[in-house]
Image (cartoon, rainbow, N blue to C red; front, side, top):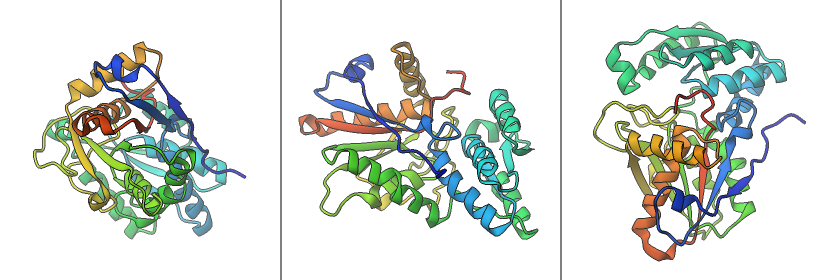
Length: 295
């Protein structure tokens, strides 16, 4: 039966040292690049495509790339109509080519220079998606739909707690917030694992200082309804220089990782450092391998 896969937890013993941290810490990475579409977005893309096929309505969705790619694959696999994907014009050419290859119908949304820098083109994409929804398209709305939190509550979260109930920290980048919210809700009653949400400096999901940032697939210029901040134990913002520096160091060590995954790793290490020696095992959800990014 076609469905999202259960992704592995990879242990890299030397990871803290590679990034310059002297910590007695075992770090595990949950590799979501193995999903169909090569990112964690493949999980909700499956649910969206399934609903599109069942309803007979064509999907329209705002995406910076990864969700659109997952939708293209899953709509084709499940026999749903080709998705209409609203994409920023600053999207990498490699991603646009991949979207075309999997059958996505692409509508590029033009942006001002400031909108590109602050990644605020999402407002234009959402406005267009609403207009299409009024014309009968199915708009899943990845930013505000409890169903997408539930996808992670029923899949990603149980994989984490089933694989090991002994993680002291679970960290991940936030964009729509659905992944970390769902993982938090899936933690067994009485669980003491700390949940760490990480966003780029310049994003305002939980920070208050908007600005330019380059990390792909994470952050937003607003707080999506799918981000349940009351479920998080820590919120960490990371500057681009640290995220991309970590990505380059980890790639040099043989680990395929994107800027958002590297940012989440840095966020986890900083959070653990602040907690002292009580944290021994941490899991970082790595959203994708950054294959499309100029790291």
